[in-house]
Length: 299
Ligand code: MG
Image (cartoon, rainbow, N blue to C red; front, side):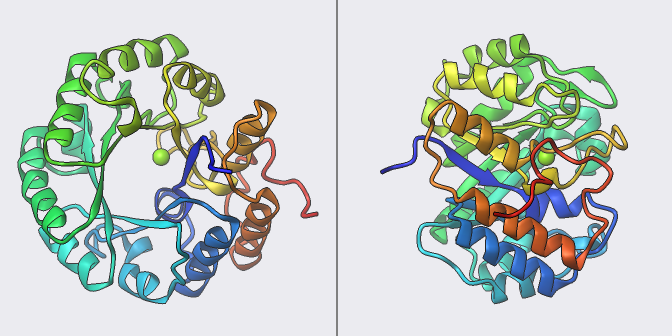
């Protein structure tokens, strides 16, 4: 049966980038292979950023060369610029993500450029990626609150999402980067976005910092959103709230979908196995913020 919900596993990239420990290349490859085996339709694997900027993902080429690609899984990688895209293409990637921010302060702090400069750059990266036949995801990060400048105006999020759509992005992922969005805020934003972007093109990237991620998933489901990001074991934490949960844990999301009878096509036991295998190599991962279901024993 065709899954009703697309779960995008972001643990290997968003998760591991924000963990304190470096995960050896071999363990990253084994983790991604185990996630493929679990049946995820999309896995965000790594980022082709400068190895100096993000040393934890400096092995992007090797990871992408060594993983086993399963038919039916899309292997997504972040590309910050044309150089990143070239590297990704040489490593055999065919799905790339562009990462924009909806807050000027966040864009300058994390992407080292004003929002509009990043958009100009992404327009040409997206054109090249399209010409190379890539599938493209565009992120609008800090779509609700910015850790530096507070509430983010809804119009700003809509403006950036529409630009990303104009560049030819196949999917626009709206990210609650610090996990502060309330169900009302999610409803207000989706209501506006859906005037401009088809519902099938939108994805939600939620963090569980304040325990509201699943409530927000519920609201999004009622708007017809069917694509959600999550990270196995809740990997990644929240850099702006030390000790708090970060990315919505995949195990938590899957249990929530199961309870509502929504098909996702992922084998939870294999997700647990993937997590335990990773923890055997790097035991300190995720220990500061156990998700509600990530620690259950393998069956
Ligand atoms: Mg995240």
